[in-house]
Image (cartoon, rainbow, N blue to C red; front, side):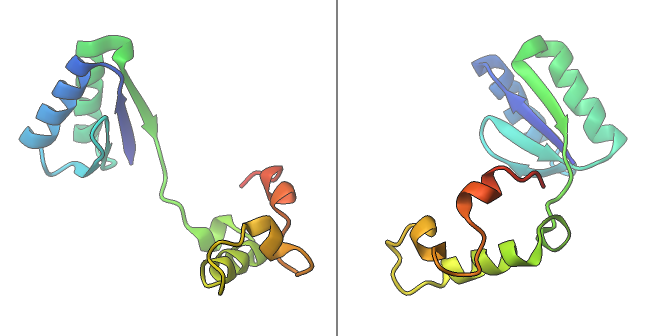
Length: 112
């Protein structure tokens, strides 16, 4: 997919118009940004917008996040356990202390 991010009012207007006129390649719109599908037409639209607004438009190629491929099983299990914890006010560091769940400081230093 292509992530198109705008940084000026004029570029945001252009993105909004692009999304309204060309609904098929638009996967999702986020106000200042939009996800477009991975087609030449979507890339054409994104580059055309960038040509019109220069540095006020950033285009990035993205790939969907698959947690079953990108994350180790202990991290996924910790996320599920933390989301289902009894006390919703417990911070993750306190929740993970004394368990087999990964330490937050260790996870911060690990690349996906």
